Image 1 (tube, rainbow, N blue to C red):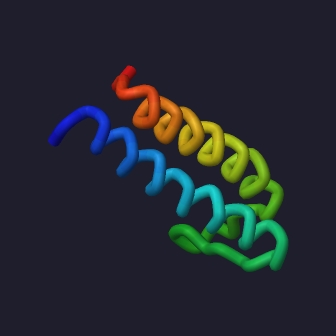
Image 2 (image 1 turned 180 degrees about the horizontal axis):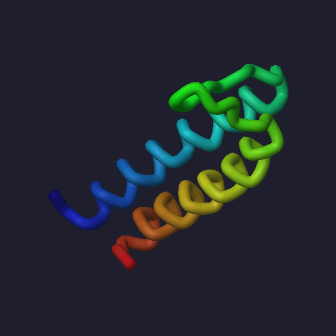
Length: 67
C-alpha cells in the first residue's frame, strides 16, 4: 500500500473513532468492558486525541508525505 493511501485510510479510521467518542459523550451512552463501566468523561479526551490523529493523517496524505 502506498504511503499516501495509508495516511488517508488511517485518517478516516481515526475520524470514525473521534465521531463515535463524541456521540457517546453527548448522548451519555454507558459502556461496559469486562463488567467495568467506563466513565463518559473518558470519551472527551478520546474524541480530541482521535480527532487530532485523524487531522494529522489526512494532512500528511494531502501533502503527499507519510510521517
